[in-house]
Image 1 (cartoon, rainbow, N blue to C red):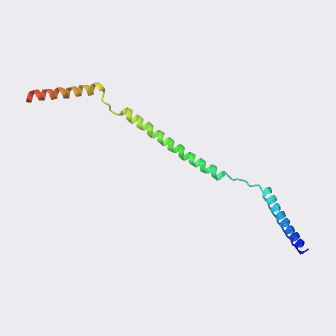
Image 2: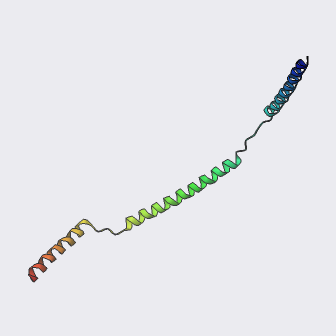
Image 3: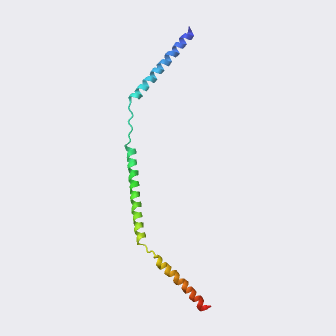
Length: 99
């Protein structure tokens, strides 16, 4: 009989703990968790603004570089050919005169 009383006490104890756990779960289920995404959205917007500024700065620098390259002095092919030919002829003349 003593064992039966111990088992019944244990069963009552387990049932009461189970009921408490069920009540806690019901309370948790009733509570709505609201996720506040405002700070995340703000951080994303700041990052997007930084990226747009960097892209705008990069675009301006590339345009500036393009204009500078267009204005750069480049020698035409005919001028380089004429200069090379004159160097060769001068070399031949110096060779003829001194040897």
